[in-house]
Image (cartoon, rainbow, N blue to C red):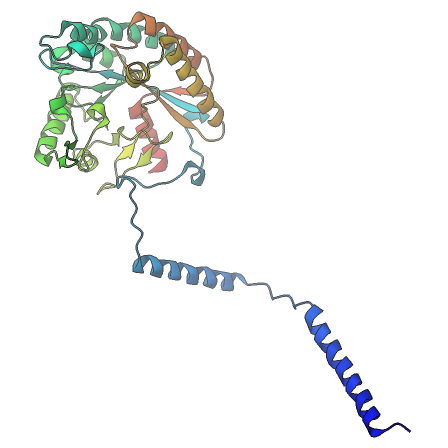
Length: 364
């Protein structure tokens, strides 16, 4: 017969085995699948997350250092942009027609003589644009069905009235570009050597805007829709003031292939694309490209935008100065590039004013 001690050991072993099996089952047992979340529950969950997010932002607001004048909206987060008749690219030649008073230094080809007064070397080079270069460009653009968006110094109206007459015959667009291209009439806050700013008084800025826009309206018989600041400089007041004066688009920010809204009181000012890449002044005077290379740059830019425009239309500004690309050696390659563009289908040869009007009609 088994002793009491042996019986107790057997019972203990059996109990231990049972417990071990239960533990093992718990470890490997699959979890019961959770019931699918209903739409109502998902909505509540999302709302709760948003409430928490807003609370966190309220408690610790994020201070961004981007420009205050427009919001960051990457192109991948927008619906595809559409142009009239399904065009892939809106091509806009901006023609800068500028007045440089003879007694004041202006954009130089040879900086060494810019300090002289008079400075016939640089003055004569610039004046070639208004006397010859512009007319060469106009003739070529007429043949290709292109029109210019003129960035106009207000004093051109008084100094060179024939330019206005011929531009009007061709239905070119005119946008404000300051009184003249003398530094005294630039709009902007100048940084001093010690790092501080000499702010341009709002009253002085208003005077420049009113002089330019007033002269243009009186001569052309209509309000000016667009503005490009001389040398693309302005103050934080500029967008607000332009909207106040009835201007509808500003070209100073070369930040996009599409128009976009500025953060202005009436929410009525937009950006229409401009460029410092396809721009003859920085290309020739700063980067130092050849005439042939500048023509190639225009063609290469067009090829990429035309390809992308198949699914999301693009704007292609080309920014030109008559005293640069109006010169025969440069004009040859400008003409080559413009002929290449005009040979393509689904291209809208247009102006800044027309792009502005289209955007407002379709997207505002």
